Image 1 (cartoon, one colour):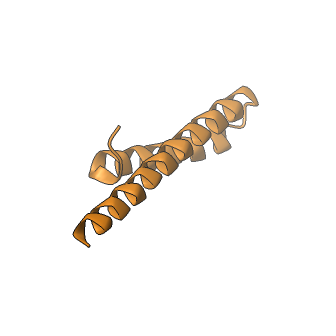
Image 2 (tube, helix red, strand yellow):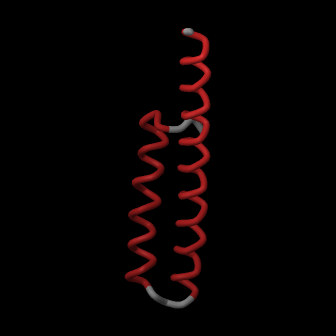
Length: 64
């Protein structure tokens, strides 16, 4: 029974990693687009979101 729980946890962790990485990539693309459009308020918002995601990654929510 314990092996199934460990496997389930590993699968959940992998999904979380993928999700955070996807969020990071999306925010980086949107930030770049906002800068190109000279929408600096939006770019700053994405800068802050990127920082939060990276902090979660470093805190152990994801291993990069």
